[in-house]
Image 1 (spheres, rainbow, N blue to C red):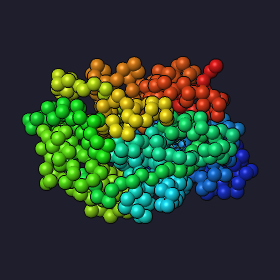
Image 2 (cartoon, rainbow, N blue to C red):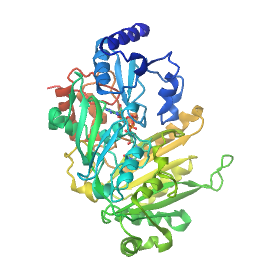
Image 3 (cartoon, rainbow, N blue to C red):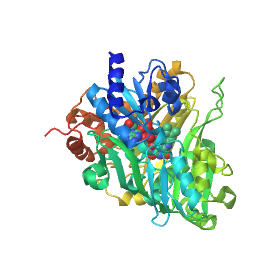
Image 4 (cartoon, protein in one colour):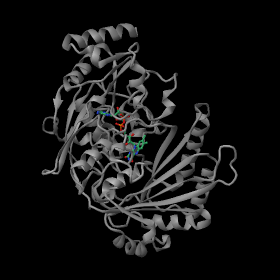
Length: 503
Ligand code: FDA
């Protein structure tokens, strides 16, 4: 069956275009495996048992995307769209039914207009490429998006996208002012042509339900020429629990210019022995200004951390991007253009905290972390600009009322142990139930988690509410209405795509 599907697809495609051999890879093509694996960021999904696409299309232009959509519909092939491949559950490159991947690797141009303080970026560009392009032209502009430079613009912007500037400027999606999409009929639409409903939906509702978003126009934001960074790690015997309690009471109330997250993990674990493992809480900050202004501010609001000049490093904004991207601030900016990255196998989940977690809750949490080898919790403070934007402004609903979000991560080396670690992650999530948001328990779409619910086949709107309300809360209904308008036959679908609203 799949042989017929592929041949028919190729015939259909070549009836429109003569570039078939260059842009379409079959399972027999010599570069099929390397292109497929090139942006898989979760090693868990490199397993041979994971279903593979019948074809991979790497379009060079929009016409080839239009053709791919038209021919896929005709042949009954599903489409997965991949930009940077960072989806936590691999939804941009895995499906259980015959499918092809549209991989946007060749559509990655970035055009910056400094005078207008804006930029057009194609979806296949990475955040690193965007930051690099901005820094090449100016040292007083930046963009508020995620920390990992290999993330793709396509998935990131369409799912929200936050990073160290978001308390000052909101999400990446909040700073999108135009976009270009190829819809289910193969039509190319910009903001004016797609209308405000669809333009609303793709800024946080996930791209995969609505079409292939090919480019985005963004507003650049202002950053000072010098910013300050600090990192203060504390173990439990250095009062980490008390400091974390204090952090919970101030993190979302700090000035918008200060981003202070806490990253919690273990130190002292070796591969042979668990003895001496200790919980470590690192308070890491980015201040949009100089150390001399940051230090009195921290003395007033979080004196217990005892931030000193010695803890602070002043640098340019782009060096802070290197720092939060895991590089040294003295590395050449070209590292931001690297696409190859070794990736562990991991499982992640997310939660929102609206009331500080009490001491006994934290102590139980530390004990749970000690059961694992390589757990990480990233606690990201909200407040600031995020609280000023209404819940319905974009599909991303987690605005005012959230102190911080938690990302839980666990990674491992051998895939034979996967179920043990995933099981631990689920127990941790159950443990956290009393301490996090409820009715619905919020989750962040870009930290995709299929445990919170998924579509079985052509799921209905009512069925999909089980997971949809967690990501989108009351915006889920509007998303389903937009889906009904633009793709009523539910062609663009996956395990967590928005179903068309049924009236
Ligand atoms: P990928 O290509 O896998 O796409 C993700 C989803 O979007 C899929 O459903 C896909 O079909 C769809 N999609 C992609 N491109 C599309 C397009 N052009 N049109 C339509 N649909 C499209 N997040 C965050 O907010 N802040 C952070 O700091 C980080 N840090 C981080 C680090 C690391 C190591 C990872 C692996 C992930 C993150 N993330 C993150 C999460 C990240 O924002 C999320 O995984 C994004 O969806 C990734 O976008 P990609 O384009 O890379 O993914």
